[in-house]
Image (cartoon, rainbow, N blue to C red; front, side, top):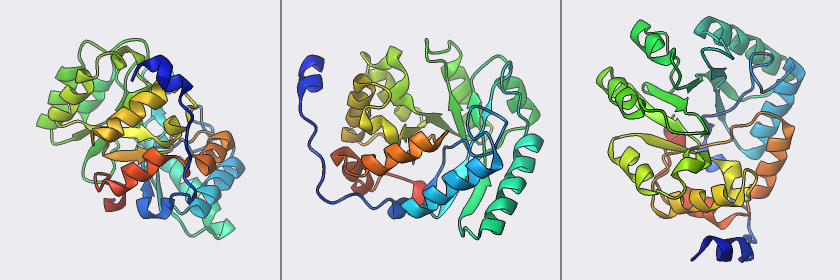
Length: 249
């Protein structure tokens, strides 16, 4: 089916919404206030995490940006912010588990951080990372190999959003074959980022290539979109595939 026909195709929604509680955990969000482009205040953090709990999530592993020349977060900054969020949630009596990792940007500084052992991971040494939206970095495969030789499991954030791979689906297959876990943004299935992104997200699901589903939640607008995405057929297909690892965390 051509891309034009895909755009014209009517999106048929489910009559019964998907139950997100079966996921257990979310692995990608920006809930620590004031340290990246996510939550601005502790009150906003509590509001969003409360809504995550209401959606059925039992745990959120929040993942602030770390970028060498922009968001210069450190494990100390992130973990200190995590404690503040936990304290606020306890005061609000919201019974959800909150942990922290990070979303690392593959830039000039990340390999140094890897060598120095400063990386925040989730689960069994899963490392969440993203790349430029403009083009794939030349050192991508080198970085993946180095991560693996040091005992980390590379988890690529929102691969469906990298437009430079949209016309070369084999690149996704190559990454999976090399042991990279792919993390899909749940709101990609709404067409929020673009219809082309939605198409690739569905193709990745159809090919059983997604290991983790994440919200990538930055603000309440993202929460509101999640409330709509629960009627998307491909979300149901992904959750029923048995391929997701969220509930193992």
